[in-house]
Image (cartoon, rainbow, N blue to C red):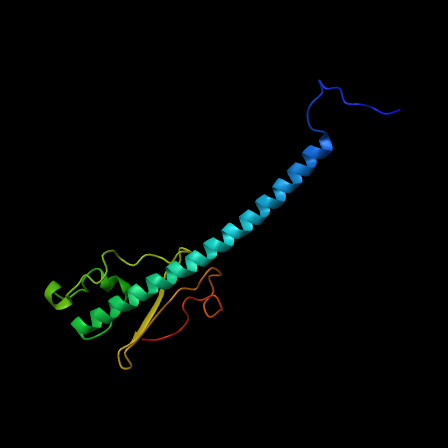
Length: 139
């Protein structure tokens, strides 16, 4: 015996609703993955751009003072024992903040070879791994 739908009982069956829900869950999962991947890429690009700005400020500092800054704070505030005229800064408008993952940038400089090293440990938070930004390259 066949059952016919009454025209008054318009709507979706439970199976149809479950199928639509499953499709929506799959789409939400794919979208979430794409957004997280995009965020990771943008964080890496932002860190690389900030590192370039910091390196340029360090070079300007050395041109005025004759040495690289001993720490990144000297780019925005004069070192103790140095007058603002001797300092010639600020080289950055604001003090250097943390990288996009909220970790401090690693900084070192070698005046004898004129090389500046500024890196971020990247998303994993460990020094010397493949995701370090931009890696140990000098000027």
